[in-house]
Every structure is written in structure tokens, then in C-alpha cells.
Image (tube, rainbow, N blue to C red; front, top):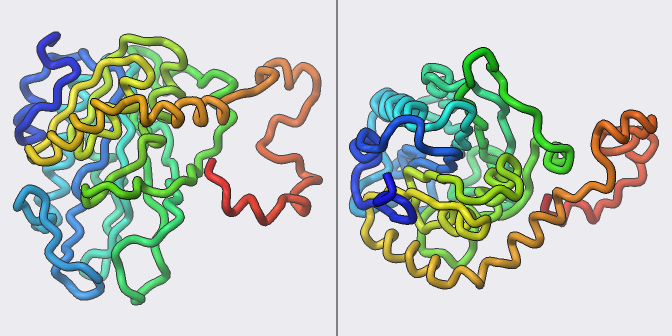
Length: 289
């Protein structure tokens, strides 16, 4: 296992996962290829390829592959561990292809569905309203007799289930998620602990690895593209350039009193007071949270 730590492995995701020992990973974060069918009508840019592999396959085969990947991830996750799976709802042959339809066929317990408001539209023409959201599924491997796991610490539970920040800019990867996304996932669960093992089976340009190292954890990555592995390693060599994200994210988790203390004092514990809704500034629409 030690020879896998802080490495991005070149190879097929499923075939590589099979070789990782069971119950060896603390948290996983990833965003798999979406099977976008981009050579069909409605796309502004067609035939997007990743390492010469087209993001277009039979939908049922794609979903079955994702179930197999998810089940392998379940096997290698420690009991009580979590996996954050970023995907999106797609339009396929007149039917909405919803990630929940194959996730629920895997071994995971679904702890929460989080909305990622990307703030910008994806690569699509005007056949429908612009789709600016994606989903992040918080998946959980139960400890015996404890199906849902422990509560979040008060400072992390302060966050809502809608996360609002744009994808990474100036990144040559076709679908990069920002460092903020895995940073929030890892920090919310592991807090200030260090030395954990973080896995991203579709590592891409390395955002999960960067987040792991900022929080002083080890990572394991997998990718089928040597080009993007080189890009990820180059970004990791410039880790200090991403350090400001950690400070900014920790500020979003800061609370002066715990949930228990607020409850005992009779202080409203919701995100907003009921009498303040009409006073929320429209400038909030420009904020990240």
C-alpha cells in the first residue's frame, strides 16, 4: 500500500482499483467522464476526446461500468469512510439520465445529494434552459450497526447543501473541478486531522491531490492520460500557489458557538432568521459559498 501513496497511477480505473487493498482509503472524491454523447445535436463543440478516447459509449454499458467502479471503491474504503461522486443529470434519447439511477444499484449508502452551482453554463446550445448545476453525491460505507455515521462537527454543518463556485479556469483539462470542491469534502469530514488516504480514481489535472496535500494527507490517483498525469504533477510541484484556497475555505467553516450551545441559548440555528429573508442583499448572488 505504501508504494501507492502520493502517486498518480497510469491505467484503466477499474483494473487499477482491483489491485488496491480493501479497507485502505479514508475519503474519495472524483468526477468520472459523463458519457456526454457530444457528436449529437445541441453541442457547441463536438467529438471531445480524452487521451484519444471518446466520451461516448452505449448508455447502459456506461452505467454498468460506473456501478462496477463504485462497488470497487466501496470495497477499498474503510468502514465509516465516505466517497464524494460528482456527476450531472443528462438528456439521453428523450429521457433524463440521472446518476441516482445507477448509484442506488451500487453497495453504497447515499448520505446526501449536494447541488454544485457552477455559475456558468456547460457546452450546450439553446434547446433548453442553461444547465449550470451538477450533483455531488455523498456516499457512505456504514460501520456495523451504524448506517448513517457520525454527525458533522458544528462548524462544518454550518454549510448548506448548495455549493456555489465556478469550475477551474485556465486549465487545459476538458472538465476540471476546482480545488475548492475536494478541499471542502475532505476538510468537512476529517477536520484538522492529518495523514489520511484520499483517493481520486479519475484524477485528471490533480485538484483532489492538491487538496489532499494542502490538508496534509496522502493521496492515490488514477488516470488513463499520461499528459494529464504530467499536468497534475506539475501543479503539485507548485502547491504553495493554491495555499490561499485553504485559508478561504476554513473561514467558511468558522462558527463562534456550537450547535449545542446555540440550542441551549435558544438562538435560531437555521441558515437565515425567518424575519431576515426580505433583507438578504442581492449582492449575495455574486458570492461563493
